[in-house]
Image (cartoon, rainbow, N blue to C red):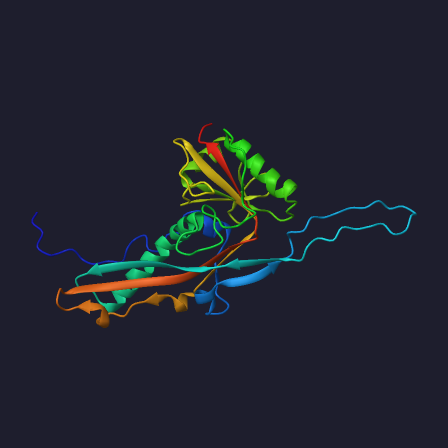
Length: 279
């Protein structure tokens, strides 16, 4: 049968689909409490970086105690995630362009944040690979995911005596290997965790080494960090370029842009480990 009409425009059927599991599942973003954070980042103090100590209870007075250094300041620099589109304006209303740009940003931003954070790219810090954190370390390479988890958790909870649950960061290519060794269980909030309670973030991580190098074939780099926070522009403050001023009348092309500012921070603990992707 011949088609006598053109296709009918309808809303995208998967526009409201839930985002995949990733960093935003483990660390849900929060709105900037102050819009100036978008330009200057944040700084705060953490009190969870001092070791605990014990002493004997005896009859002798004057038991000496060890005093740790002052609290550590954490600073985090901002970066911007954006998406864009260029197309002809015929049949494209301003509202459709606005909504499409927001949808594109919503779909892309988690993976972009994972990539930027994993490479410390676009001026972002503190990050994982290419880290300028003087306390970041590379642990001895291992051959299994189980051994990697053991080494990372041993470093954070024993060597560093960190008292809060940390976060393991792994590229998506490693996700099936975590499941095969049965090292993960999902908590009530939908976050995968180790038996120790360490959260596992799986996503668009680069897998680069701490120095920024590519791992060998069949290998990747896993990281562990302390607690994290993610701040971003509120939905009301997401930038979407206006329709009319961005129409190039010489070429009849319409340029659209949507962008959102982000700040990602870590509680000052970062360790990396090279692991073979094998069962």
